[in-house]
Image (cartoon, rainbow, N blue to C red):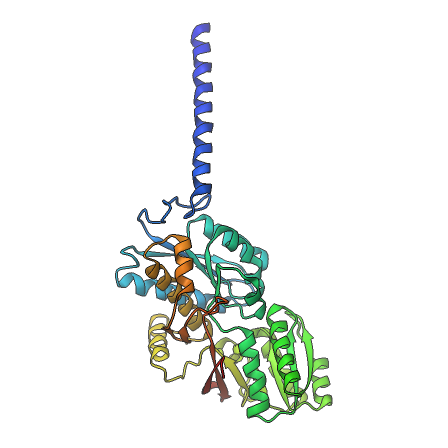
Length: 401
């Protein structure tokens, strides 16, 4: 009996040692595999062992802007569905993995790590500039292409080879807004309301620089996300005698500005960041509050561009909701990522990054994608005028103009 017991103990010890050795070997293989991360599906060095090609989406599906996140998800899913209906990419079906960042920076980092661990080839999103800045070190270290819609000029200065942008930078948007207020609307004294986050301050710095260059008198007033009362800032603008106002903030704050500007009688032309052209913002406002306002935007659904018309018909036919900026921009981002995978001829992450850098003249609903030396892919914006709560296309302005 004693010999049997000793033999059993020795056998158990051998199994434990063998198991530890096997687990250590597997973890080492995952860490050195460039196509995967711990917790994800292991692939070979080219990322081409078969199965689906996984791409990720980070969207704000809950939090302060859930409708915007839903439109992102619908648009990217539509791009994936269209690719799969044509036989997929590289002969494989595309699988979309979705994570909700709740519009929070720490959650964006959690989402990025989770998607990378699940073996995605690339990521679309997050949207907010703050969230894109929060995850940029993670994607750089892990080597995963990520396509954001964050517009702060700060993204351009990061020198991150894996971070791409599917919308124009605020260096373009805000300059077009300021230029339009001065050159088209004739303002000689410009005021700006802006959010104190990266998005708002990026726009403010660009507008300030333009006005300084053109010797235009300029004043600005900042506010924070979730502020509810802008009476003090608006009265300062009114008392200063500004001749046009720029507004650079997020959806809820933009709608409050519209109501309070009307109530306080600041009766001057208004040029806004893209949100004012979107249904989810327009629906928060009364028609008279925003009548005649201008928005500089990626996308005007009423544009006669064939690519825009095709997208609007497809999106609205599929989901029975209006196509808008978030759906159009992130559909374009997804198309860019899928095009890069196809161009690379492999799902290897590094090869896809190189293909992203070489994308040129890809027509999407918001214009033509061509990646520049800063990984910015869009270089034009549209101006729209609000008429009875409908954004009416005015003109398209390229960055070089």
